[in-house]
Length: 420
Image (cartoon, rainbow, N blue to C red):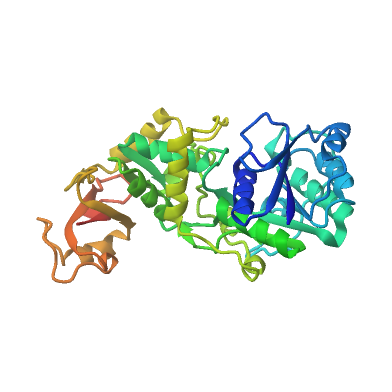
């Protein structure tokens, strides 16, 4: 199979090249040669695709069985590229996004959900992220116009994993590497729906080989992972003294912290956002899409950062340390915390998980555990599995006037299980 990849040096494009090479596919890439580096063993065509004459010169009279295009710029570049390739490629896959669905996104949105309006011949570059849905939808229309029933429209959701040049997961990993108390937003049980870039790339290559056509949502299963599982995995992989401090989402939002950007990946629990983590990707799953464990995504991203360094920073991604500390300090003023056991050091016991339960429910469970940390005859159900070495408690003392009228009792809301 002869495969042309338009791009191929950054994030999803780079992962597609690697997936195709792993399958023994004859790979050609076409890019400007200005960002990223081309993989060894591929044929490289160099051209600015926004220049139709340069594109035609680079393509020459070559033909391919399939094309995979990850372009995120003006739709006209896709229209011009498709016009040049329609007679020399058997199959065309455009990597779009679930952002092309119109707001408000319906629950369990599938490929038939309403779409934004767009122009396939738009030449203006993307300058405002608010235009991103229309730009990607315009490119979809350009691909469909040229290739018709030979076109595949892939609509991934949030993409994480190695080579991520947006900086979302890399920001969290670097923040946890710094250690100390880490502002963890909202409820750790908040579900995430994302796709590992390697799972995306593998599906795209397989779809090109099989000649799949039509539109497919490409996301993880709803609830495949949670925000807590993602950050716990990061703490486990990086092994610093970082301690996740879960702050209720109302306090985070009241402090003016922006979800998704200042605290990347995270969306608050709200009807406006919840449906973005409930997209229906069953059609793609019926064709072989699978999800790898969240820890594998975290570990591979961390290994890539260690080997190649950070991507260029993008404006607005990540929370300023001073602002983070201000939110943490405000939390401590409202509800002072004392820890019976410090976070596990690098060589110490392993921090399995941070759980958050309603305080009265947890107080009942704690009666099975004494204050010295000796294991109970029957440990809490959440501890099933490895033997409990000791229980680390975080006590939150609510004072009169700090959110509960006349409250003077000690309420235990968070606990950590530390095991051998």
